[in-house]
Length: 96
Image (cartoon, rainbow, N blue to C red; front, side):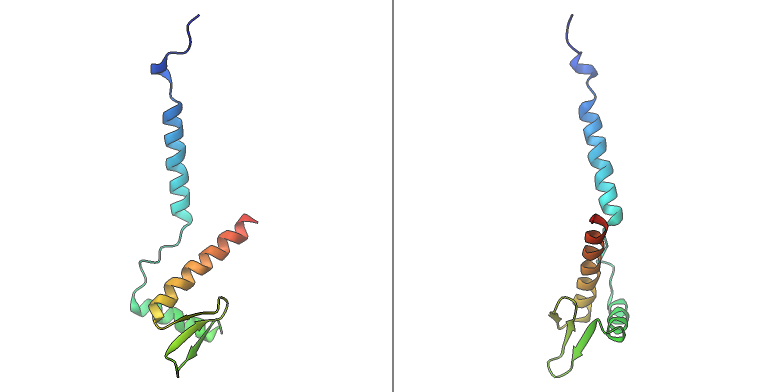
């Protein structure tokens, strides 16, 4: 008896579908940091200062992200970093 017809093989289609589904899942759980404008960043940084997550150092004109020890001279950079840092920590916690 002859082997399977190569024209009926759908394994490549299934693998492509699975890759697309995994990419969509990954996109759905990722955090978009491109949408942070200056006003949003300033609000987030003010909230983080109030929560003692960020310490402003006025003499050096920098902001210190206390949990990571990272220093920033821009509230937008800090806001983007914090969103990514938080997403990374949440992903690690879900993987445990």
